[in-house]
Image 1 (cartoon, helix red, strand yellow):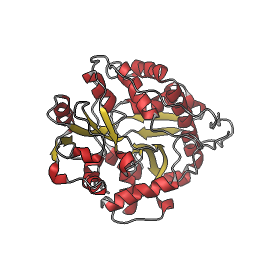
Image 2: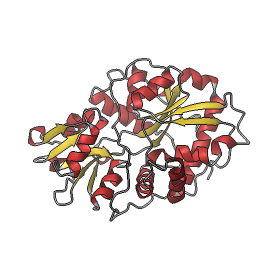
Image 3: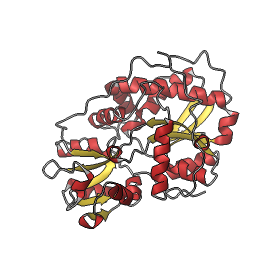
Length: 349
């Protein structure tokens, strides 16, 4: 099964650069909703050795998964988890569909497409309930609304989710595409064009390139979220093989309960979590950048009334509406075919 779309390609963060002048505030983790330690109350796992595939290379938003491992939380839940880097959501999803890996990080787009074509996968958690897709611009030529794109030049990755949604995004927000210069470049060239001001705007992730660009430029950029203009496509989603899920319900419950604890620790302690990541990946992790990437990730999470990863029915319907309207999916199934919240930890107040 080949899925037609890959999520935005993200560059590694490289070496330290100039100090960032503005830092985003950390989003507060709700203190009144917690699953607690369920390691002694859940039934034993059916499988203890777990392969967990990320959809890209090391970056700040993946920190909770490594923290869950390094703080011994997976072990506490009786799981020996191997966290592995990836090369995109499509190959990560194919790996779980073919049972080469047990769980994978994807966006909601690829499994929605695959499930429409009977790919045997199910989404079991989606941590970014608010989409990280943004259009960035410079403060001297700010793009605050979609209409402000008119008369501007924007660089985009040809394989990104936003590029696939771009035409519908403009149409929905009554923007004339003939008045915009759109340039498609692969990720590194796209980033370079924006940083050297060869373009007025760039589409990217608020959780990755935004803090990276602000650190490199030493200035605060103008940020326009796609979610604020009708295009909220959830991200940082976990998927697994449907048959594996049926055969390993307790393993999955323990896996998600462990990640919930790791997520809560990371969002409350971004500096400490980053120091752990620095020890793991000394040549990759820029500490200032990673702290800011974690804080940007926290802004998009929600555990107000549910555990981290809870998928809201209305939000998911809206996502399918967007994918259907842009023809990224051509067939639509009932919601239970796409996702389940049944394996997430139960929240206590």
